[in-house]
Length: 296
Image (cartoon, rainbow, N blue to C red):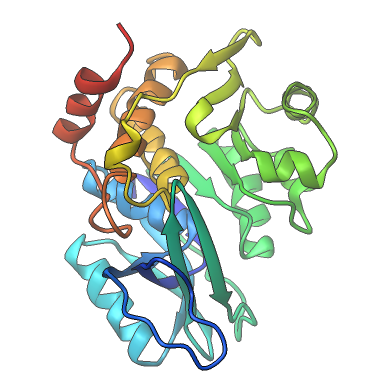
């Protein structure tokens, strides 16, 4: 395998609507999309679309939504290592004016231990903190093997502090800063203290504050996509993660500034499309975004 991603399977239902009905109200959505969802899972699909098909260790239920997901994975030829749950997880997403409200229904009561995989040839591991036992097992194993480890720190989880001790590239959300009562620079200092070689805090339209291989703190501005063509920001961060893993796999010796610049182009493409699958870019799409929206 080129890479292993570990996460939680969701089926996302994304609706464009003026408002959410209440009580006995009824409304008709203007548009909708049904797609795969979940942080590391969406990142895996993005990585596959960009030419590097990862293995995916994720939850799977034996129901019609689970079978729908397997059809989605088969389209991208993603090998699935299933961890059984009783019911599939769902997300209902309502994008509106650059924000998105999300209602989730999740089953993460895993019925079996995580599977033991042959990691020969693996060059990158990407985690989002789901499946805490599997995450720390494979992070520790990959650290011992010299395999790059990456974490999407979208929120505080039970093993975040311990897990970071085995992470090379930790890119976290502002939500984690809020949960830990740290500002962005204090978060970067914390990530350094945990031994993360590269660390960053994503900040939406403000881009990302991060530190590079030398420890220098830098600002990566977001591409200037006009607000009038932004459709759905949900999943943009997940696509960002999948894209920088793909960039690393393509050019492992390139500086991380290069990988992140590529990834921001992928995110710029995603926010112009409704739903996760429609927002997966090709390499040509990423290059086009940079050409169109980078500041001169």
